[in-house]
Image (cartoon, rainbow, N blue to C red):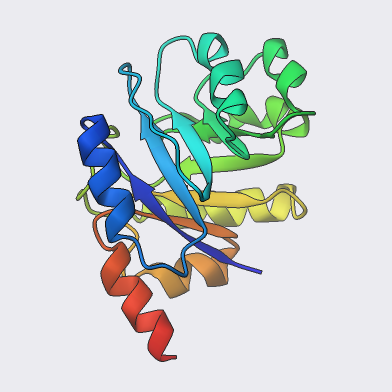
Length: 185
């Protein structure tokens, strides 16, 4: 089962509230990008968190307490294992990081979160097709490990990402367009 998950990168609590209100009612799960600021509000939907912070271990317990079902972090380490009984833990991998560097850690996470844009931390960037080969490599080496793809996903490339083996597509700027297309199918 593939998941198409809307991504929210809030600038403030008001911005988060507005972006959540714009999601279609049928959307019961969303992705929130967390930078160094702590922006949060109570909501009635399930969610995952992408911690794009220097020391994610310091925030993981807080986000699990808030109800995060999944957490993606950019640092691999033994300290992540303590959270796996409370939420799914994923290793986020930037495009410029070699897969060989992270492969030794993939047996200790619940999923891999592949970044598919060159610059993270803002929405609207184009997908870098380098991610296609990375999906294929991970799919061959770890066929049971779910793969999330984050950044630049749109109506022109989503199908190829799924065909290559992506399980979850995190969609920011083009979510509404992709959602509307999929509803008509």
